[in-house]
Length: 460
Ligand SMILES: Cc1cc2nc3c(=O)[nH]c(=O)nc-3n(C[C@H](O)[C@H](O)[C@H](O)COP(=O)(O)OP(=O)(O)OC[C@H]3O[C@@H](n4cnc5c(N)ncnc54)[C@H](O)[C@@H]3O)c2cc1C
Image (cartoon, rainbow, N blue to C red; front, side, top):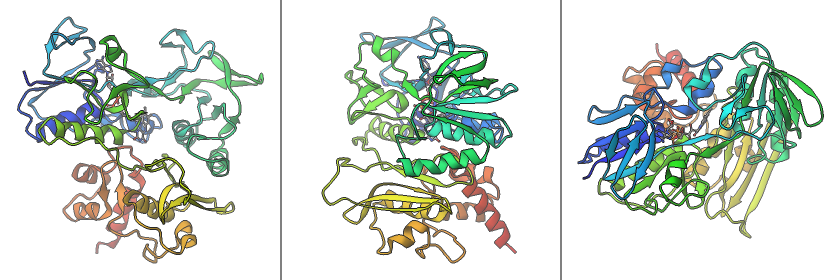
């Protein structure tokens, strides 16, 4: 039996099924997903919630007909001895290889009133994890609970629609996992300027429909409470099957669990102590596993990645520490703060290359620093020019070079977009179909749109 059965219908499962078909996997491939609709890109849900993207646009490209797809069906148990899974409609499905791609579920903080029973949110409270969560918001103020990347993005998006928004976050600054105090002051200023009421250093202490009470007694009106309080790997099936679970389902470098017939990828998997929570990681792992299952075995090695919070009109990039993560005696830190212009940059350099950092404010500095970091290339001698975006890499009008990666999720360069445009893909949707740009986290949508406008303007 060589059939591959993939549990979960998210981006990880979708990419793996598509690649197995493309690489000519000889056995059958089945995808079993609990959600009622075909696989879609969850990373773009924020844009559905704020009304800038139609929910239909989330759907990922149709899988080849050879892939058997079951939607709206939950896998309830894995019988490892018989190599078969049980479905909630009573059916059983045998497997040769089982892949868990069950993703993650929202973490609900323990605040009295948020849940009516374990796992059931009270009226007016929601997390944004599935397409079903993106139904229109009710009237009245929105209280965003959580000030990490998702909370900042959500408050930014909703405040742009005219909603009255408050954001409550227990740390004294936003995005403390990714930004230092100095850097975090900038997104706080952006949000405040859009009218978002920031309650930093405060916890939600109680919820009753229509209001949130904070731990200092303040009462916030709340038509809707949006939980942006992180996720937990969905590992119940693995745990019940006796597989090792820590923060996620533990896998080795070949993305195998302790059972050689069962693999795990995406948000549910824990590799080298890290649980992935990005669509880029999910797709990277799908690519590695698809190769491994079609005879091109190679170990999984996470690539460098950048985090680009989605705050259109305000540029920000976080460059996580590259391996080896431990500080080195030769590390040198350079930083710059131009409060008046809203520019901030802080880079840790190791051996003349970027080891980690943050750049906020200057679009060209964000793009060029990201490029150097992702390619692990040496930084130029004139660091001030690099950090202010005036290093001459860009043309006089600020145009980035053609080899600049615009869509990091799908590794699409400016040149690839321009080529597609010249072949007839003349709008954002056509460019997305031709190159897959904008279909990952969506952070490059504005850049792709402005490239379209520039190319249109340059065409006689
Ligand atoms: C609002 C939001 C914004 C985001 N923004 C970004 C971003 O900007 N950049 C980025 O990289 N990432 C972002 N992410 C994260 C990204 O969406 C996830 O990393 C990605 O979806 C992980 O894919 P996955 O397939 O592993 O899991 P999921 O997308 O969680 O899919 C798992 C699927 O498995 C199904 N499932 C679970 N258990 C079972 C079972 N027993 N039987 C059958 N099916 C089951 C679930 O119903 C679900 O459909 C965002 C996520 C959210 C919610």
